[in-house]
Length: 367
Image 1 (spheres, helix red, strand yellow):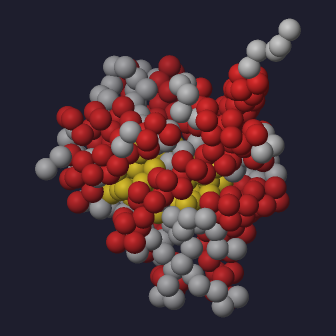
Image 2 (tube, helix red, strand yellow):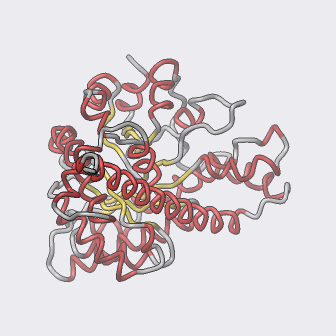
């Protein structure tokens, strides 16, 4: 049995952290589903920026939309949703077989709205309506301004993937928002089945901290943070508050490990997948990591429910001068800024390509 199948059998979903039109057109995504137990995927502005920067897979669609007057964000949204609708359809059998637990794809609200609660809510509603797929999450950042938008989106029945979470505290804030949204639905007599996931980013901790740590502590911070967060996740699932909601039909907001591609060339290329196995969770991984894990991955022990040695590891890291709370805040701010940069670059790239395609279609100017 392949390592990917073993993780799946242990109760962890493997999602692909990538989408391109080429992956869909050449059957690669379908093969990943069939051969590597991939049961969902995630996207973000950086992924779409890279997808649209290379090759000509999007040229025909960009030109066709240009001819009917589309440009800017509306054009991009439709391009992205065309891809995600196709991916959602590929995952629909999994979605149905798991009763909506698995088989999801994700589309992010504009990162330009990260500090705009009401704008985020409106964008989430628009994406949810435009997508026309039951298995599409709208990604909302777990920033201070995003937390109330998460609650309101859940109340309105919009499935949410909370993104840009870096710490246990940030995760707990998003989980509280999810619960408040569900509790409001209960009070309003609404169906409590509104799926959600909370995406905690891992490797960026180590990228930031490794330069300040002795070599024997490299690549330990992200995993320790994940262990503490997993402990909080299990406690929340077992809490009387959630159990009351579960008895009336609510589902837990699933924990998702993001940013799990190894960035340190001296570390194992399957480090974070092997270290973060846990039932009832998701690991969304880049293609390179998926191939590595499928080829030579070795599933390790499941994460300890009590956090294991996380406190001891974090205490050593604190002694080395790492302010974990400050770093978590900075990572979230930096992550949001990186998505804004990628978003703007992508829109600029689409506009440039659109102009070139329009000019080409008109042919040479007669003299």
